[in-house]
Length: 312
Length: 246
Image (cartoon, rainbow over all chains, first blue to last red):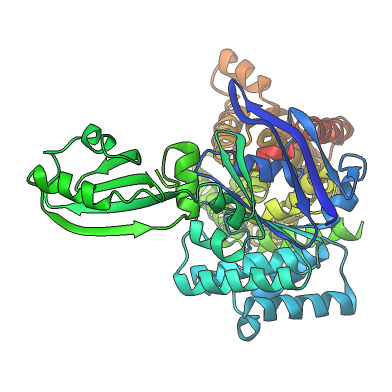
């Protein structure tokens, strides 16, 4: 698969704080690369450097085999960027916003009109084209925010958490739109801290934490890496009579995490130890309210790699 | 050039669509002139002289406050976010800040000219035997003020800080320069302090045109204003960094 973008040893510090530690990755043409990580992982800094709005301290970025510094204007022309905050002129109509932002990429005349119409249709805002953005709902603004980034038909679309704070219906609309972009051959870099989104749209995933890439692969390969594990979530009536060490004594138990009345236990697959765990809880006089068992998920991958949940 | 014009047009639209900025430069300024002129009419031989004083001095005050118009159109929170897309686009850095300077300059200049066009006949105020000199002399001051606003934004990377700082500095300089009332008759020390304020020099230059039909200060102020404008644009070039916008 052709490499559209290659990032080598990218590093960045803000004063003493190293926010990116020589990260390396590639973006293949036509894929949706999801960058997953908690707040402060370095996702937005990576995106800001990729958009050439922020300089790096070291490393290089090559677009179609050439360093972006050599052909910065051509590189920026090939990018469509969806910033985390809604970046629209509220006092103007959806159409005026699209005309303006598409014009910045050199579109004019019939090509501009066509691009604006396509982008409005893509966002599902054709019938609201003349309305001021300030009259739109949060979800509609988010969709227009994306439409403004793709109106000029960029080769690479960079989306920085584009679904923050919107309703599930709008989120589904946006995720469907991204699948459409992917099916149309567009390459997308997508940052998020929502696992469900990654499950839905990703071709490949990069997991970041503390400024480093800690895992990379498809969702299948990442899950396979922990496929020898399973997770039980046990809810008890009052937790306090039993300690984590008691569970570690049970064969196969790898990690135990308690949160109020919920106990999360990661155990080796293939070891049938649930009855022993239940017996242990009962022996201590605890009453079990509910037990669930999960197969490998990205959440578990993240938990295994970082020792914490994504939204901790 | 096409992309610069696209940005410039949008900046002009944003400025003229702001009721606060339009109102501040027209209605508020006119009311201030009318009230101050009326209240201080007893200190002048004729009420016409009071209005003349405040039309000229408050137009200078308004021109200097143009710095805040520029900082507003550059980094005001609601404008800054969509402006971020300009940073992402294949447009160089120069058109971004220069468009803001130019649009703020045209916005303030046109509204101040409109104000003069209405107030001068209404209050029987003359701008000298040839008002063209007065109007010409306004241009470099308006431009320098707009460039100052953008330059401060480039330094402080924040519209609120810039506006607060500029507002205080301009108010103090205008107070010393005699914008609100003349300090010349308040003793030699205060008169000396007044002469230190550049606003006093501007007042002298404009009043020389209005009252004496004298161009003694015209060229020094015109050239000085142009040089300061050029230096401030150069300063923006040196200090503007796209990452300040993130």
